[in-house]
Image (cartoon, rainbow, N blue to C red; front, side, top):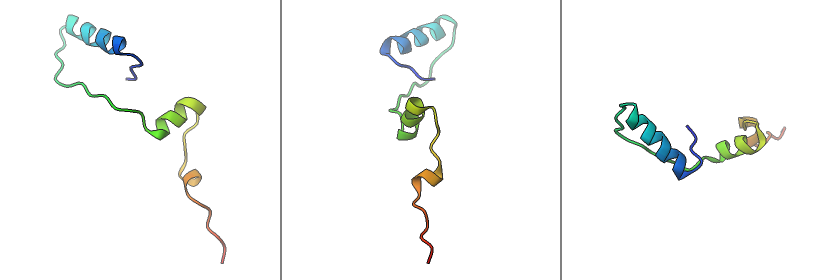
Length: 57
């Protein structure tokens, strides 16, 4: 679940606690370049975009 601000994470944790859910672990990570590209362009990257075309011999 994308959390855009510290306050959102705090609110989610509080809501889960209020509903009786125990939390064993919470982890965060920075978005990958693919995730950033998708968020900006709305398009997924493809392997053909990442690989150079073969040169005919």
